[in-house]
Length: 378
Image (cartoon, rainbow, N blue to C red; front, top):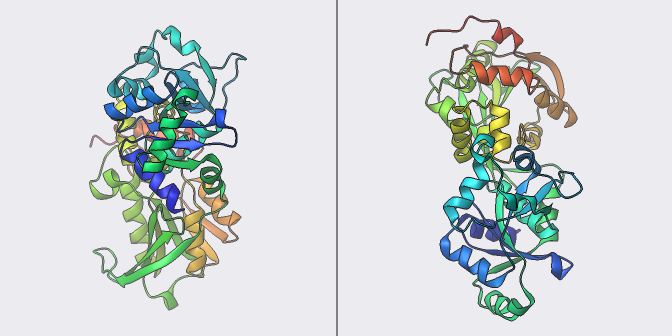
């Protein structure tokens, strides 16, 4: 685990990483497109074959890419002829379809990504970076130079199997770290319980409202993914802050409940990518297509950590405050009984109307009643 964490740190710093695979021909030097430095690009060029861009199938479909057999594999590798600067490569990796038209001829050079490239791409997603890599397979004449860099620690080596094992680990376990009383404006009797995922990547909080011995049965629970813009600043582009505060009021009225607050900003793509998606939405894309343009799926969130937290709290039966069917399936799949589901709505306004529509029509959320509201003039 320590090596994988260091590998992610190297990618975040804009440095190259050597991902080795069982077949030497499948190994590659990779660097994240986000934060890519000029010297790293030069290093990859000097050690490897012509540079390639590695993207997810979500991004590939948006770019209109397919391999020679006409298929779109889970990850694609395409030629980077004509793209020599970090800024140009970044723009290629995040531009909308309209900005990319007409397609440069070099995009015809498309292949499935190698195991090493796919593993490196998985690391970027773990780190909430843009899921895009610059890749170079090391030329045979440069193998001695690469070995020297690996010995000196100038370049870190990770095996694709090690990364794949981490990503493929089923479920997410959490460990209890600390807890303390934190009186809130809407709930004076509140206790914050802090958890850390055992893989060390993310940290979450459970907010326990009311005196546990007086909690209703089933226990009212809100699983809430962090939304800095909505929860803290009251953004009108979403209804997250209203859902969070409405949940706290409901818990107080009912005699208690639990908010499981997950570090899954922007449906799991991270704050930086969420802001990028907002910029794409200003061009007319809905929230699903904007995320796809950046290389992400419609919803990257997972709820294993929430289930693990509820299990740690010995909660077996819940009244779940949600409009999201995925949360209901995840909780019940974790062996916790959802006795009741309570819809929770915000206020419809002209800024969040496209967002709510996409939730209903693209993601299947139970928000038809919210769409029937009159749109406020805000």
